[in-house]
Length: 93
Image (cartoon, rainbow, N blue to C red; front, side, top):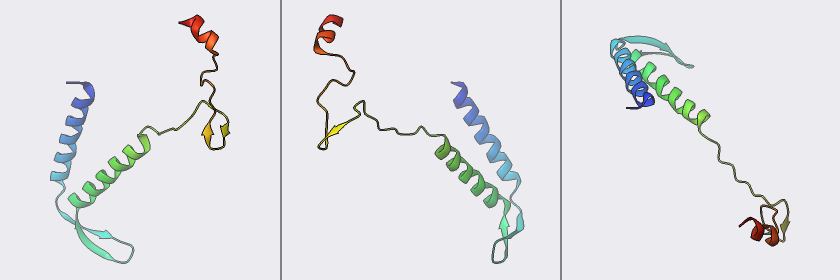
């Protein structure tokens, strides 16, 4: 197993044990009132939201780019993208 997989398994086990130890009900202050809510639910939802936000913040950005600087009437210019002439291409290959 890779280190990353082992870390994920251990971390998941620790979170599960922590959640199972905190199942009692507490008064939770919402904006408009107070309600009894299980610690399990509060910690579980916060952990899930943290994972989602962490994934969203850490994912690679999709970058669309082109080598051409100019567009001609909505079409890409027909010149070579790497700036080499046909003579240079033949010399290299």
